[in-house]
Length: 168
Image 1: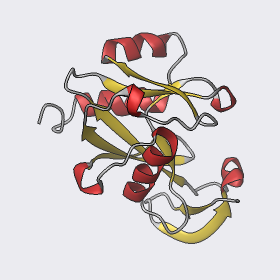
Image 2: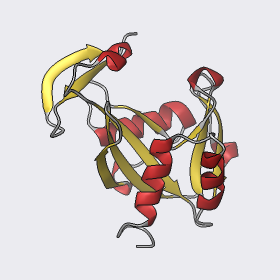
Image 3: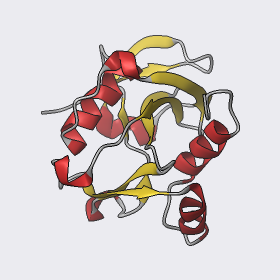
């Protein structure tokens, strides 16, 4: 099934233009897509990182996904967590903590959730996710320095740790 995504202008306003998701790398200048991510921190202050499948680069990242046509970013991250980890997330339990243009292509909406999910309770979508690992920020930074973590994830985590939402 082909997925479609909306295009946004430089002010993150939906333009009404819809394209097939696989065309996202061919965006005209001034157009952007929207990606939703979830920063889950457990009671040990560790961050949920997913190891993407080999076909997706085999890198560590926050759980995330493209916001599809007729979907908002909160609905997207709830859907992605169910599809990729088998976790049912209550929309009211997540908080939007960051909105930013992460690169030339994508706006990122980053949500936060305090939760103690256990790896053994997850059902991973192997086409997307190889594993889920709970890591400290220091471990994530070390992995980033070794080229094993997506920059957008590290930036989002760093921004969160310096925000009003951390330890609230």
